[in-house]
Every structure is written in C-alpha cells, then in structure tokens.
Length: 433
Ligand code: ASP
View 1 (cartoon, rainbow, N blue to C red):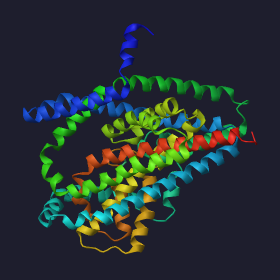
View 2 (view 1 turned 30 degrees about the horizontal axis):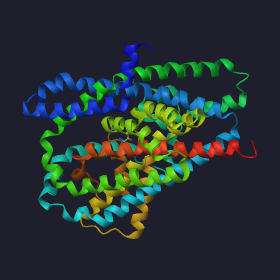
View 3 (view 1 turned 135 degrees about the vertical axis):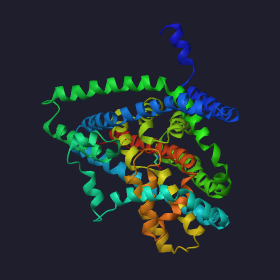
C-alpha cells in the first residue's frame, strides 16, 4: 500500500458516509434557504440516482452468485437443511418479536387518538390519487388462492426473473435449486462451474469496492435531494408526530434492546464489536432506504468485522435481505393499529393476532426497496377490515420512516448471521466433528 492510499484508508467508511450525510443535509437546508431547489434537482439529485442504480445493479448478481456459493460451501444436503431450517426459524422468531413490540407500543401510546380530525380530511384528499395507484398495484398482487405466494416464488423463466429486481424470491429459489444440484452432482465433477462462480464472486466484490468508493458522494446527493423534496411537508410532520414517534420508539427498542440481547445470549460477539460492524451498514440503509441495495456492504461487514464464516454469510444474508424484515413488519403493525385508532375502530385480540400473522407473512414478500412495504401493508389492513383509503394519512411521512425501518431490517440480518454462525461453529467443534 503506498502512502497516499494508506492516508485515504485512514478515514473509515462509516466516517465518510456520515460526512456525506451531514454535508448532504446541510447542503439541502442551505439550498432551500437560497431557493436552489432547481439546482439540487438538476445537478445534485442525479448523483444519488446513479448511486442507487449502481447498488441495485449489483444486488441481483450478488444474491445469485453468493447464494449458489453459499450452498456449495455447505458441502452436503444435511448441512444445508440444518442451517437452512435454523436460519428461517430464527428469522421468523425475530419478526414475531418485532411485530409484538410494534403492537405493544402502539397500544400503549395510542397515537391515533390524538390525531387532529381536520388533518384527516386534508390528507385523504391530498393522497387520494397515490392510494388509487397503490390499489391498482395491489390488484396485481391480490392472491386468488392462499398458496398463490408459494406459486409466485417459483420462476417460469429464470432470465425474466433475473431481469426484474423485485423478483428476488424467484432468484433465491433458482440459486438454491442450482446449488443443491451442484452438490448432488458433486463439485469434483463440475470443478469449472464452481470455479467460475468463485471467480465471478471475486469480480463482483471488486465492483462493490468501486461502488463503495462513490458512497459518500451518492449519500450526499440522496440526502440533499430528500431535504428539498420534503421542504413543503412540514405540516405532515407535526400532525403525524405522535405516530412517527411511536414507530421510531418501537424500532429503537428492537435495535437497542432486542438485538443486543440476542447478541449477548446467542451471537457470540461483544456489543462493541457488533455496533462497530453494523453502524456503517445502518447509515447506508438509512440513506438508500433499500436493504437490497445495502446487501454488498452488509455482507462485507458481516464477514470482515463480525468474523462470520463465508459459508454462513453467503447463505444467511442473501436470504435474509428478502425474507427477514423486522423493521418493516413492526412498522406495518404500528401503522395498521394507528389507522384503526384514527378511524375509531376497536380491534379485538383476535384481530391483533391476525395483524401479527399477516405482518409477519407480508414482510417475507416485501421487496427490499424504498417503499417496498406499502403495497404489502394493504394486505395487512385488508385482513382486519381497515379501509385501505386510510393509507392516505400516512403516505406523506412514509419515506423518513422507511429509512429507519430499513436500518432495522439490515441490523436484524446481521444479528441472525452471527447467531447461526456461532451455532454452526459450536456444532463443528463438538464431539461429532
Ligand atoms: N425499504 C425497506 C427495505 O428495503 C422495505 C420497506 O419496509 O419498505 O428493507
């Protein structure tokens, strides 16, 4: 490493991302004060859009390649079913805990009871069209059979699935199938295919390094554009303040209490090590509102800074980015009960349980993209008879809350990766090994 490089590397990634965020926020406010909205829109926002595109560009190949390698590295089907089942079970448990926390907080704080009635009509009128658009989207995902979501996991054309970032579950299905077939055939008979994916992985990791070098600029642009976009919406913040506070409090409980507790009891890492590793990932998730876009960094930090083995990280994280969304499911629970409170509907205990079930299931189908959960939230609302139009009340404040829940989503994936890794290492060190 030459001296210039060494100097550049002395500033850690999280500091660069934080600086990008700080300057972006500052610049956004300055631009508003000086009425430079047009400048930000034309000349700054495109860099944020480029950064988001780069992250999304790498998400599909990364999930495909790392999951295939993840399965191949497990070496036999017994290992796969052991780690696979454990992973999915822990993911579902953390999601249920997250939804329960959301339900408890919103029932205790009751933000819907203090919502100003005059604002209710105002928001309904303002967001009517957006809700209509979302409803049209929902018609498409509306299931005819309760098993439709399982049918939708199976691709009928892998190239079409690879060409669509929202088809991540289909890509996961194909990667698992391909990986299992490779193990069964035996890597000794297909060394060039395995080597191909290993080498492709190295190239992808290098591309990720390049993209991350651009992260501070991308984050700067995303933040500046966000401030300018939100400048006219101060009214929304004050009216929905209690609701937003409830969501943030519930998410904070998950990040600062639940995950650290899991980490202490089952994760095998110190809290210092854990928070040091997750912080930059959380900052990127916050700025991009997309856990799929954050995946490259999630994988890198989990492997390098939490010491999670490659075989576990390559399997647990790409699966988690799609099916494990603790922040999203917690948020869906709070949103549903909040809307019921505003509309004066009293939810029974059975309906609360239904919210628990639908929020858990729908978070599995939520794509890890900005606003990915809105369409899924309609399913939750629908299940307990809350009018979908109520969504109009909360859409305006969705983006900032999306940023926070995405932070929770990625932290959850990293936590579970540590738990599975610890259990796996203990098992290998055990008497059976
Ligand atoms: N933006 C979230 C994510 O990418 C999904 C959502 O809750 O809308 O994880």
